[in-house]
Structure formats: structure tokens, C-alpha cells
Amino acid sequence: MHRIEEIQSFRIIGSRIFTALAFDETAFLWQKFRTQEKEIQHRIGSDLYSIQKFPKGLNWSTFNANTLFEKWAGVTVSDDSEPPFGLLDTIIPGGRYAVFNYKGAVSGYGDFFTKILFEHLPQAGLEWDERPQFEVMKADYLGPNNPESEEEVWIPIK
Image 1 (cartoon, rainbow, N blue to C red):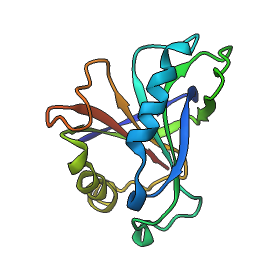
Image 2: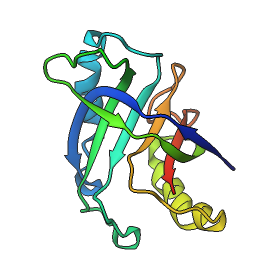
Image 3: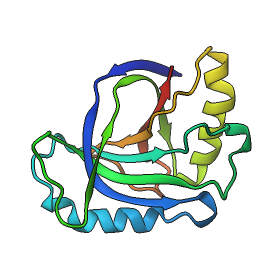
Image 4: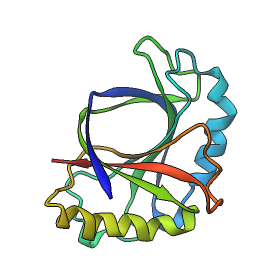
């Protein structure tokens, strides 16, 4: 099941890479970010954000392991926070999101995401919107390889 949320835009400071599933460097991204996380000032809350910015006009039926996209690891901050050297900032635009709960290791996430795109959204009459998609990991997140890990998956919808 999912819920629909309408959110205001918010600011993220974090690390960014350009990647594809075929040469996924997510672990490197998070390692880099975690080494500088304590330098971030004016942080809001303790949640961690994994953000994907997919190419504009992406046709999901042609998405494959070599499709390049932008991936972020970060935290929310107030508007007056400056990124420490080596980190960047980005804005997550406000709007409507379908929010799904995922429990499991990262190895099962691809199948879960595929079901959201090709089953859950169409069955609910929802359509993907071209805004960043993100996951929220709470303070009690157990890590990417733990089958008991839980996160929220936020899908931008029109």
C-alpha cells in the first residue's frame, strides 16, 4: 500500500555522482558523504536522503542498466546553510508524491521499484512526474544489506 503526500520544496546538502545500474557506485557515494556529514551546519532532523534525478523525458520502458542518472546522498538543511567544501546543495521541488514503505536489503529494491512503476502507479491511476525521486532512511536504519532495514520510497506524481 501507499499514501499520497503533498510537500513543500526543501533543500539538501550532500554528495552527488552520475551513475548507471551497470556500474553502480552508490556505496562509494555514501562513504564519501558520511566522511563529511558532521561538517554540515543547520541540519534539519536526523533523516538521510538517497535521491535520484532521472533524465528529462525518460521513457521507463526503455530504461536499462546503462541509463545514466544523477544520484545524491544527503540531509535536509535550512536555507542559510552553506555546503562544506566538497559537498553540494540541491532543491527537492514541492508537489505530490506517492510514498511506499520498503523493508529489505538493497538487493531486492530493484524488483520493488519495478512493481511500483509498472503495477502500483498504473493500477492507482497515477503517473510519474519529472521531479527527483528519493528514499528516506530514518535514524534507526539498519544498513543496505540488512533484511530488516526499512525506508520510505517517495515517487513524484502528477
